[in-house]
Length: 409
Image (tube, rainbow, N blue to C red):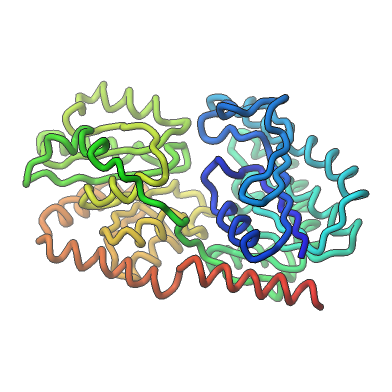
């Protein structure tokens, strides 16, 4: 079976679409990925990639075509708009010609912001009369950045979203809350299939001593309690609040906050922590390979996740939650909606409402005072829940059956 995959983010960037593509290549699918030159999250082209280098390559048996984009830079509005538009234009023009000489059995879209990257896939579907599967990971136009949220733009984008939903055969959603938003735009319930996140296959790094030598791990005492956040350090992660809490608790030096990752807000938050005198309790360690994450998380006591309180984010379960669950560690969350409800259902940690600083501080104190046995119980609850509901093998079998049913029918 020949599948064309559209995604603006692909290996060596860390996204779950990598798992789908490489797993299905192992199953014997012939896959072509149409993507962009990698630049996320650092904002510039990855080493070894450019407008003239590695634009076409074979990765693990998968044909990868990388289209030119204007890099996102430091994430300023003008840079992001140019990044989005450059990829959209490049992918639309490329697909117009590519569809004439390359025949596929189905088209699959890994749909993160912006939504209009799915339009070339709609063109390919209609040109070749093949099924289109849309994997929705970001709701649109609800997630349009505030600097673009003009009334006329929202109205036009809603029509664009309806056009795409009308033309796809299946809509995959990562949380059940997304169903409401999608069905408000039309009669699409019969197309929707629940397709939750999973954890990427990780070959754990053997360089454990290297990570144990970093602060605050190297000088850790038996009284230290480490709260770790891992992932994109962006505006949507709403990390200002946890820095404010760290300031309130800075006299309790045993409570330490560790941030792993890069992103648009990192410099701002790091400077804020310095200005607040948090050098002994707040640590921004930078970005590390995915293979190192289990090592870092074993050294932490609690794993932290948060999002802003925008309405559409209440309908989304961050993939980070499943990743944290799989590590067998308690979760501290500042979330509303589906993400918070999942943590409560799994009994794997504590969740407080967005921007409720008092509740977050109380939750931190509660976790710090818990016996190790109770913390371990919360962590194991999460791991067991993950094993029952979110394993990667379950999702791959589900998608394999979906492809075969759509293509055969």
